[in-house]
Image 1 (cartoon, rainbow, N blue to C red):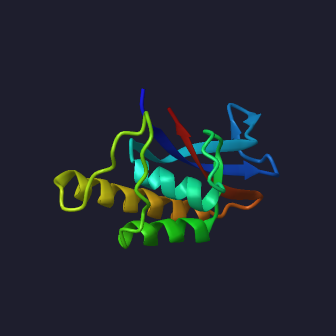
Image 2 (image 1 turned 135 degrees about the vertical axis):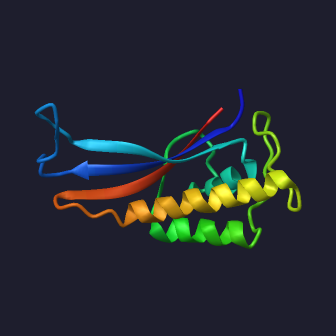
Length: 132
């Protein structure tokens, strides 16, 4: 057990012109990011975008939210967060921190790109969900 964190991109097709095996596709969900025990990032999302409610429910993030998260990571402004199943986030200066930092920025930037996905008759959004 532990803190598993998922960043998902959703695309809803209102015109149902997209198909798989001749069946209309209503929505697709793609994995944009995944973290294992990145407690501080989890804490930032819960405190900033979920009104402090940490109940494993999806949290919808818009472009401005993702930009804010990127800035928080880049400026080392993620709140220190602990929990029974959370483990510890990497500490600045460690090799693990550099890898986690780079991976986090890349995944959040991918989420920004997803927000800009435009296909006629569809709209996109991003959700974060944690599980422990």
